[in-house]
Every structure is written in C-alpha cells, then in structure tokens.
Length: 451
Image (cartoon, rainbow, N blue to C red; front, side, top):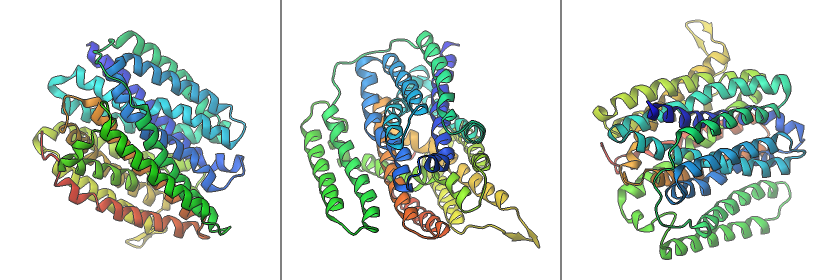
C-alpha cells in the first residue's frame, strides 16, 4: 500500500509543476500588459523556466543518487514554494524573471527524481508505472489552464503564484513522512559542467533576443559576440565532460547510435511540441480574440486527450513495443501543428459554420492524443539505454527536451515580435515546428524497439 501512496505523492508533485507551468502560460498576456513590456522581454518569463531545467534535470538525477532521493526531492519542493512566493510579490519584470529562476530550480528537479522513485518502488512493472506517470502530468494541464484563467480574470495574475504555496506545503509534509531516505552512492555533482552548458544555451537564447532588437536598431555586434560566447561555452563543456570523472553526460555514450538518436529525438521533440504549445493561450487571445479565461479552458481538450491516450498506451506498451506508438504519436502531433497553422476559424462542414472555439479545441484534442501515444513509449525507450540509472537517464532526456523547448520559445518570440500580423507570425511558427516534428521520425528507427 505504501508504494501506491508514494506514487500519489510524486504524482502530486508533477501535477503541481504542470499546474504552475500552464497557469503562467495563460497569464502571459496579462503579465506582459501589466509591466508594459515587449514580447521578447516577456518571453523570458517562459524561457527562464526551460533554461534552468536544462541545467537542473541532469544534476537532479545525479543529486538523488549522491545525497538520497528524499533529501533532494524535499529540497526541490522547498525551492519551488519559495520561488512561487517571491514571484507573487515581484514588483517588476526583471525581478519576476529572477524569481522564476528560483522557482524553476525546484520544478526542474521533480521529473527525474519522481521517475527514479517510481522505478524503485515498482521494479517488476517499471514500464507501466513510468507510463502511468506520463499520464498524471497532463492532469495538471487540465487543472492549470482553467484555474489559471479563473484566478487571473478574478484576482489578477499574481494569484496563480499564491495558489502554488499551500499545495507545495502539503506535498512537502506528505513526502517527508512517506519517502524513505533511499540508497546513496559515492560521487559529486559536476556544477562546472552544468554551468558551461547552461551558459551556452543562455548566450544562444540572448543572441536570438538581441537579433530581434537589431531588426529595429541595426547593430549586429552584440548578437555576434553572444553567438561566439555560446560556441565557446559549448566547446569548453565538451572538453570538461571528456575529462570529468563524474560528467553530467558521458560523451562516450554518444558514440552509440541509439543514445545519440534518442536525445536528438528529444531535442527536436522539445522544440516542435513543448516550446510551441506554451504560446497556445496567446494564440487564442490574439488570433481568435478569446478572453483570458477562455484561453485557459481551450487547453482542456488537449490535456484530456493526453491523459486518455497515455493510460491506454501505458497499458499495452509491453505488447505494442515502443516504435509504433512513437511513430503514430509523432505524426499526429505534426498534423495538429499544420492544422493550427491553417487557422481554421469559421470552418464550414455540411453547410454549417463551426464555432472557432470548437474547431481549435478539436485540433488541440488531436495534439493531446498524439502526445499521449508517443510520450510513454519515448520515455521508456530512453530508459532502456541505461535501466540501472533511471534518474540520470531521465535527467539527460529532460535536459535535451528542455533545450529544444527553450530554443523554440526564443525563436517564437522573435518571430511574433517582428511580424506586423500576429496571425501570420503564428502560422509561420506552427508550420515550421510541424516540419521540425517530422524530422524526429527517422531517429525513432534507431531507438530501442521494445523492452
């Protein structure tokens, strides 16, 4: 019975992260207008969370092994609560971004730690347990947009951060009582390596932002210097990881085609799907002229599709294997992005004009089904590469996905900020990301086919 309670606690933590992320996405237009800032600067509210996760995810997996998963998990919940408190009181956009950094130190740790804890508790049913964990995350994506839209419309965007705090306290107390200290291994955290990799991504994302500013005030010196810095950080990171006894990423693994293919898939998946979907509420408000509350509600079909498809896929994963669910799910997600790019408002079927909200909701439902089919298979296919180090491999997988998502958010804000017609900007984003998603398909055939 205890292991099911533990599953519920770590599942609650993932729901909390999901609620927080989707609530911020819904409140994004209001936050932008409150601080009277441009979309590139405001985009950092979303980007910083992805960026910090890039560094934190692989470190969290390693920290769980070195310090024990219970200690690391409790520290993560604490950081999330403190970050939420500070975000709720942020007086300006710069401090809000800084406080989102603190909050993301906690949220970025949850997934690798939760996956490792569940794998330990369900050793004989690891594939199904991790698959069901994938179906829990979208529950927060059902609650988050609706709660976030209601809180923002009724009390202002700060309420979405106040909402996190009591839930985080309850999760902390439950975890403190239920989780065992866990096995600890000798080793240390490669903070220098994590810093170098984060510096490379940070410099690259900032360069993209500066390119957007350069289109208004032509000056390519700063973007060029930032791109050079990103390249330098990446070179130093590769050299560091090659020499470190406890690397974040064992570069020797990239000589193995399945490992290289899996993380290339994750990078493109993060860019094509995770980053892009953060802008759906803004798309609903600016293109379909929905209210903030409606822009949150419109995400519900996507989350319902993800939950239902994840449960079915997880149940039949030992029979279906990994490859076909990934292929079907990826193709479905690419199709949904194409449909979003077509902006099918006022679609007429059998002489009846469909409500634009109904059409958009149907497309998002299709996207959710695609994610729900692909995610459990893709997550387990990565773990098959190093089944004895679940937290570490989940952290690396998350790092690549978040890197893709971060780059996607930066490119999207650049396009939207510099196109006069917002609908044309979104069309370019959705068609482009559909192409990126299709590029993941060849890599599926190089990943593990089945358990």
